[in-house]
Image (cartoon, rainbow, N blue to C red; front, top):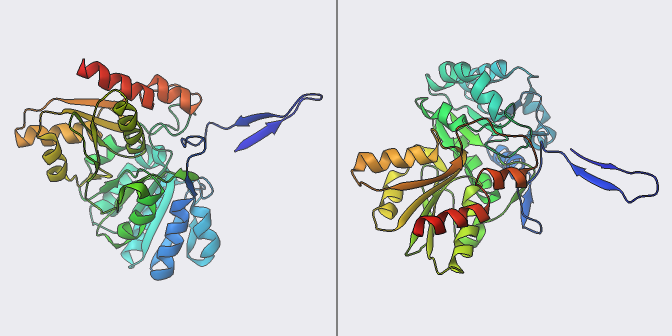
Length: 335
């Protein structure tokens, strides 16, 4: 939703809607609508895949699937509970539904329908949540800062927080093939392509070490893995050697890989585009305590509060998700 306004005698003034603003850096390599194209490709190979949305096809990239497979697409209108109930019914017949809406509506409005209709019977219903965390500037009504906290307690539900277009493209067919319901924190539109430079492949339920480092270890998920990699490069200028572990599957969590990296004397930092309550930080902290490591973990996360509306770069800087803020926090911790 971009608009151009012009005043007579002046150059056009460009304005970008906060709703679908991109978090990609200027000039960064991106891929258009990776989820939509990945779902079409998966559907070409699996005729059981169907798509549904709650009046948000264009804003969750589901419109690409709808155009390719109109007979396998269902527009449910602004009725998220109906969306999830219908998806469960389709799964009961042996179909593989992907149902898209905004993350806030999936987590806050329709939790019970997902829980009892899909998770309890362990049906293959794939929820695709747009605008996760701080990926919109429209304020608390659309910022799903607590979605993983809400969903982590649901039995049988798999939670995936992808970093980039590579993660999304590779995750979609694995989610379709997995048993039980899944929740994908969707990055939509022109999504950065980052992980292709690290010899990375997405494996459902697995964390991956993207780079080694002797001084600090970052454990990150979602778009914050991109920021972690950027911060690691920036910290090298300060003679700080940073390892980065990407954990795109929040549940079930790959504690073995993460704890192997944390069981050292390096500074441990988690980075997530989610509230400090109930997300990656608490998942990692729980694993550390359960294993008896006695390890301090420093969180980079959104605060436990309702966030402001505004431009994404401003908000990311304000709430500590920018590369500059990450670097400053690490240097302060190292003293």
